[in-house]
View 1 (cartoon, rainbow, N blue to C red):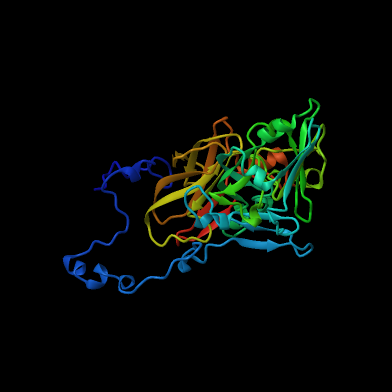
View 2: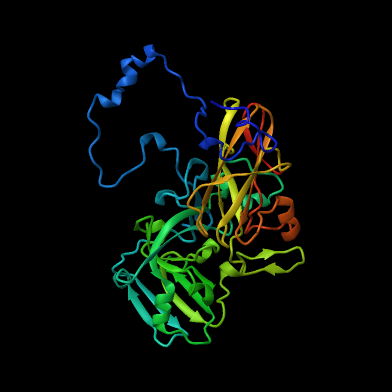
Length: 420
C-alpha cells in the first residue's frame, strides 16, 4: 500500500523521491478485475490467438501500429540533397537510437557506394602513405563504443526570441546515440608513421559535396574510430556506409560520413564548415571557432510538447542527458519553474559521452506546472539557464545551444514550450 511517507514531496510541484517506484505495492491506473470479469473468455483468449500469425521476414520491421514513430525530414529547396532529418526523441525510450531513426544531415544527398570500389587514403605528413580497401579494414582488430552524435546546430530554434511550439524531437532531435564498432584510428595512423610536425588531420567524405573538416591530431589519436558497424549491423547508407569517422563527444560535423581520405598536416584546412559555419559571433565582436566539445545537456522527453496529461495523479518524468566531456554525474528536475529541484534516478549504464536516461516520479495535482531538467557532468560543468547562455554568448547564436528547456503544463494537461 502507498504510505503517507511515500507520497511526501521532496520539491515543489509534487516531485517525489526518485526511489519511490522501486517500492512494493505502488499502483497507478491498473483495472482491478472481479471474478466475473476473469471468467470472460475474451480476456482469457484474445482474437490474435485464434488464427495463424504472419510468416517470417528476412529483415524485421516495426509494428504497423507504430508507424507514427518516424524521422521528420526537411530538405533545403536551394540545393539538391541538402537537408536534415530529426530523431523523434519524444517517442523513444532507453538510451540507444534505432538505426532507422538516427538523425541525418546531408550536404548533397546520400551517395550509393559499392564497398568493393571504395578506398580510404591516409597521406600527408606521414612516412608512408597508405591505401586501404574496405575488406582490409574488416580484418583489423576492432573495438566498440557507445556514444552520442549531436549536430552543432541542434536546438538552434531555441535562440529565437519566442519559444517554438513543436515536438521535442523536431528541434532537439539532431542528436542520437548508438553503439559504433570499428578500427581504432590510432592503429592506422601509427602504421602510417606520423611525422613530428603533423598537428591536424583533415577528413574528407566521398559524397558529392566532398565534405571536409579539420580535427586536432591529439583527438584523432585518443578515442576516434573508423566505424564499419552501427548497433551491430553494417552502417546504413544515410549514416555513412561503408566507413564513418566517429569522434566521441565532439560536434557532429566532425563525424565525417562515407570517409575516403585522411590528410595529415600542420594546420587546419579552414573549410566552409569551420569558418563561415560552426563559428559563433560573441558579444565582444569576436567569433568562437573550433568549438569542438558538445557541452552537458538534458531534455525531458516525457511529458513534453505534443503529449497531454489526461488525469491528475502519478506520472514518471523521463528524459535524456549527455555531455561531450564525459559521464553525466547527476540530473535534477524541477516542477515549479526552477524554484526547487530534486535529483532524478540515472538509469544504468551511465557511460562517458553517451545518452543517459533519467527518471523521477511526480504527482500532478491538476495545476499549472513548469518542468525543467538540469544536467551536471563529471567535470562539474552545470547545464545553464537560457538567460545565462545568452548573456555569455550573445543573441546572435545558431550553434552549440545547450540551455535548460522548460515545459509548461496548464490545468487541462496541455503542454507548451516556454522560456522560464
